[in-house]
Amino acid sequence: MHMAAESETGQITIRHCNGYSDCRACMDVQVAVWNYQAEDVVPHHVLLVAAKTGGQVLGAFDNQEMVGFALAFPAIRGYRFYLHSHMVAVLPKYQSRGIGRLLKIQQREDALARDIGLIEWTFDPLELRNAYFNVARLGAIIRSYIADMYGSSSSPLHARLPTDRLIAEWQLGSPRVRACIEGARAHPTKSAVSIAVPNKIAELRCTAPARALEIQARVRREFGRLFEERYAVTGFSLTEEAGTYLLERYED
Image (cartoon, rainbow, N blue to C red; front, side, top):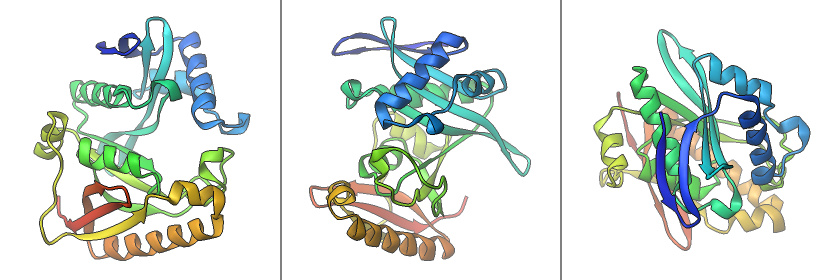
C-alpha cells in the first residue's frame, strides 16, 4: 500500500519498509530528529522484527531519500488487539509540510485494512504542537498519564526532565476521527474543564529547568486528579500564550 502527495521539494511517497537499508535509514532519521546517543536509537533489527510480526514500519520518501518514518508494534490488552505507535519522526527541514499527517493517515488505513480499530501512542504533555496535532487534528482522546515512562533520555529536546507521557487513543473508525481526518476540528462541550501549559515551556526547559519541572509537576497532578474522576481530553486549543487541554467526562 502506497500513499503519495506533493511537497515543496517534489513527490512524497509513503510506503512500507521491509528491508535492511530502509530500516538503517530509520536509525539515521532518529539521530537527526532527536540527536539521540546510540543507546536510545531503536536499532534496525528491532524495526525489521516489527515489520514482520504484525507491526508497522512506514517510510516517507522524497524521491529515494527517506525524510520520515513511523514505527508501530503489535499490542494486546485483554482480548483486544491494537497497534502501539512508538515513533513518528520527520527530518527537521521537512517538518511543517504535512508529512507527519501523511504517515499517520497511512498508519490508519493500513490498520483498518487489517480490521484493527485502535492505535495508541505516547507523547510529552509539554510538547504543545504535538498535543494540538494529536487531539484537534487527528481526533485522538486521552485518559491516561504515565510519570517518567522511559526514564532518562539522551535527547537534548527532553532537557533531562522526567519523561512524563500522555497516552493518545486513536479510535480509527469513530465518527470523531473520521471527521477530523476529513478536516474538521475536535471541539468538546461547553462544560469542559482545562489544563493550561505556557507556550514558553520549551524555552524554560533550557533556561530555567527548575521552573519547567514545577510546571511539569503541576500538570501531572491536574491530569492525575481529572483522570481519576473519569475525565478525558477531547479538545486542545493553542494560542500565543498557552496550549490548553480541554477535558470532559467520557465513556466509551
